[in-house]
Picture 1 (tube, rainbow, N blue to C red):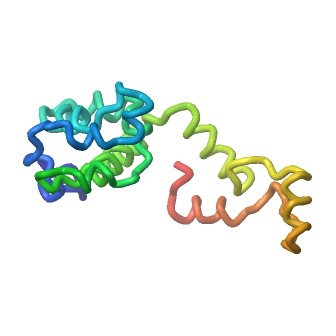
Picture 2: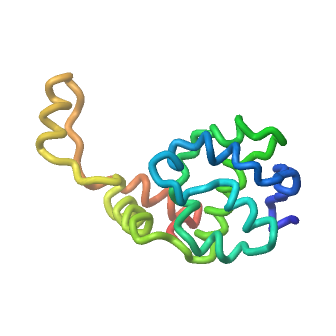
Length: 148
């Protein structure tokens, strides 16, 4: 199953037999049992791509690669989840938090506000003060069309 520039077969999706070894070693699954990487692979394998990219599970993955390392079939689970995220972004399916982070990053060049506390800590170790505004990230987004 090929989707644009990404070939699920090359990443081993068709070899997954849903043993659950990826899920049982997943740190996110330990905290939230509803997150199951093998279930994401199953849904992709049966053609339910819209369900995967429209849901929240792909955004819960920390990309630690434990699932890929544990897979007895060599399925590149993390890469598949990364691509599912890419598909979600391209189709406009972003969680509210990610949208907020993107807007903040575009506006300020940072993911969070720089406070006087941050700058005090930086001053103690002789680092320069930071401001909230940075146009560099905005320029990169525009050049790569990441702001679309």
